[in-house]
Image 1 (spheres, helix red, strand yellow):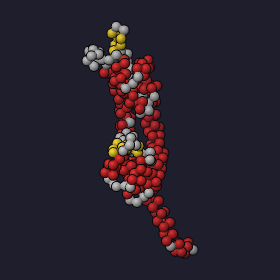
Image 2: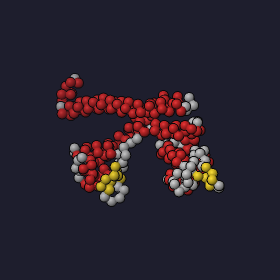
Image 3: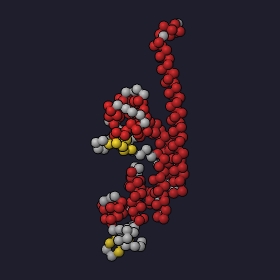
Image 4: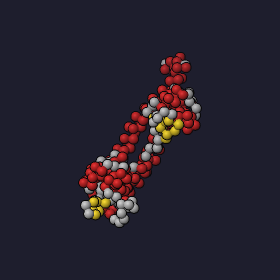
Amino acid sequence: MSGSSSTGDVYPIDRLAAQAGMTVRNVRAHLSRGLVPPGEMRGRTAWYGPEHLARLELISGLQRRGFSLAAIGVLINQTPSGSAEDALRLYRGMLAPWQPEEPVEIDEDDFACWAGTELPAAATARLAGSGLVERPRPGRLRILNPSMVRAGAHAVALGLSPDAVVEVGVQLQERTREIAEVFVGLFRDEVWRRHVEAGLPRSGVADLRTAVEALQPVATQSLLGAFRQTMQEAMDDFIRKLSEDLAPADRSSADR
């Protein structure tokens, strides 16, 4: 490394930790685990550069995606030191296609404009209490799942009760979680397991990311296709029941 602490090119450990948004204790723990390479000793002080900061940011990113420190250590140690950074970036980027929508924060008075439909204050309050919307402070809304909230607002505007719409939203999240686990299991058993059995080769990470990227539209199309079919079947059942309710005598005659 070159430069001095005054130029911002290198840092002592306390400034490195501050730049990474970590405590010095966390940085020392990562160093002791071998997750971050040691700094350059100058006298009795170790100095750290941009490559150390980038590594800490990658580690934080992987942790946010659910990787344990032990798993990150495996990824680093199974990769030559010169390409460890690339491998970590590939693993972190592997899950990028599944990133949910970013939350949206707006003034509460702007909700109707944002949603594209006008709702009674009570209906807006009910949606805000659904777990899909937070109130970070008075007069502000943080919309955690913009697509679902916008769809729910339009459903309420069509005449459905806010309570019914919120309940449907809860059920959708529960049931789509089950479907998501089916696709994740498919990826784990058919793709990831082979990668692990091959020794986690760096050359295979790009193939993993390609598989994940390809799985997203396949899962979406499959889910939509299955929903269209089952929705049609459910509507057919509803119409048959409706027919029986309207003309039960005809139904009794048909059965004889």
